[in-house]
Length: 208
Image 1 (cartoon, rainbow, N blue to C red):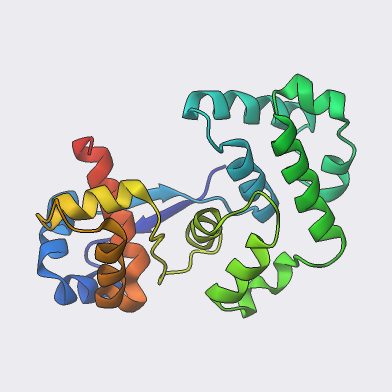
Image 2 (cartoon, rainbow, N blue to C red; image 1 turned 45 degrees about the horizontal axis):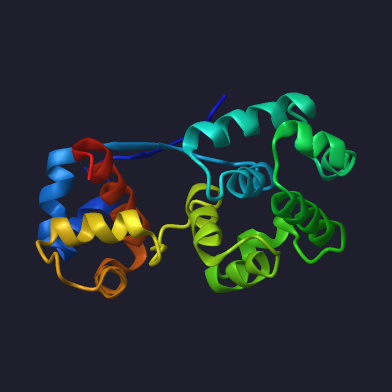
């Protein structure tokens, strides 16, 4: 069963965000409540991100489904470690992604990544640990913070979709997207993730 993150526009945190940003407040009133699927299994979440790099959503879904079937939906270090190169090729993983996957497993085996400790770590510390794994960049780490850790103060500054949505929402098409998102992050503060969830909802509703 997929867990869902429900954001109510009447929640105190959402109301605080609306009080900080009148433009975003209008969007929230238009969108209403937001529901997003979570990726609560950290290993599965990171592997899904690696699989999905630089290919279409449809292709990524097909490869991920083949991987899921191959391991009988057993998302453990031991089970992933048993995959052979032939398995990886049959599943459809490129050589770089095979290396990324095994690098991730090695980091976990060597206790360089300890998911059980993540709740006590800062966003920056988690990003630092994750990006030490070859194949995991800052954007992937930030998305992990949002959809796996449910951290509420994250803005993936490099997300091109969010940049595009923000420029349209705030009617500043010629602004630098990264600079605009940094400004949003400063304004939104502790509710920054909620702001991003509404920008993503804006993208989906209006095909931005």
